[in-house]
Amino acid sequence: MLELVPQEVDVAYEMVGIRQAIDELELQFSRLAATFDKGAYWEQEGSNSPIDWIRFNCHLTSNAAGARIAVGENLGRMAESAQAMQAGEIGFAHLVELARTADAVGKAFDETKLLELARENSPGKFHYKCMHYRHSVDAKAVAEEQAELAETRFLHLNTQDDGGLFITGLLDPVGGALVRNALEPLARSSGADDYRDAPKRWADALVELASSKTRIQMQVTSSVETLLDLVGAPGAETEFSLPISSKTVERWACDSSLSRILMQDSVVIDVGRSERTIKGPRRRALISRDKHCQWPGCERTASKCDGHHVVHWLHGGGGEIENQILLCHRHHWMVHEGCWQLVKTDDGRIVTIAPTVTFGLPRGPD
Ligand SMILES: [Zn+2]
Ligand SMILES: [Zn+2]
Image (cartoon, rainbow, N blue to C red; front, side):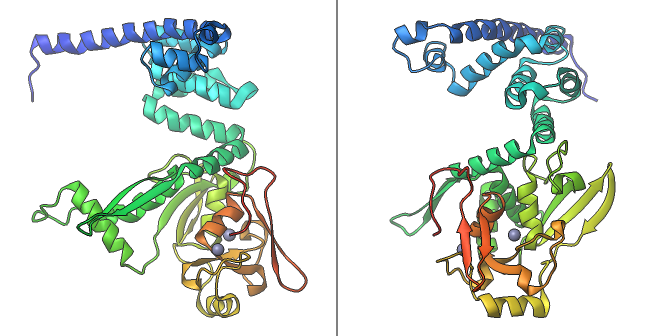
């Protein structure tokens, strides 16, 4: 047992005390920031927005400035939470999360319920709880936000003079979770003789993944209500990601090696095995009929495609080949998360219909 000398205990409690004092100041700052936000001084000063003025003059990031304005603006409906913070039960970070949630859900904001969760969870964990709460209040908005996040994705591959490949990039939470899920088992240390550091193991895992033929298995825990897009349902959960929307689960369940755990009233009612929904002779028939992605103009080969169910099995669609078409990853995403519609004409052609709300730049079939 490590014996604590008195000074260490003092240091520990002094830290807690100082942090509480800082939180109190943050609260005062937030009140002022919300008042400032209503005024016009920032405009006279030639700033683009109140956030911009605060960002520059108070040395904060825009995100931090925006968070403080949000807290200040929402204090009227977070009075109990502000008191809980002053009593040291929760931190300012919890207040930020509460304010962001209040902004996102509007009238549906339930302070009592969320404050209880804030008391029980660290700020990081509370963030996930709030995401689930938002999903339960407005699943559509969460799905739209995730689809929008996917528009921030990028990956740069630059071949250097010596032939090495320099990789930089950013993936959205759902795409990121898939990649982590695929790389994690391959990146584990292989024992006492494994002298590779973590970055080297990740690099080796990526190369190993690129040369493997097996499909990735992803485990998703979801309630039946989530899958059916019912109001009040929380988001589904994977090991590494934020709560994910029912649209993504729907796509994964359409035809992927998804292991699913379905819950109803906190009881496991179905554990799906991770294998393709469409397989064997049926898959071969589908491949020989379609040959490539059926999105107009796309020619991604069958091996890169999923078998998409035109009417999803959740909504009573069957496994017959007439109800299936091959779609590549991107076009499968566009149909589920992107809300594009596919219509089969009488002469068997596929016509695409754009969603009324598009994410990023509107674009036609490509
Ligand atoms: Zn599908
Ligand atoms: Zn395609």
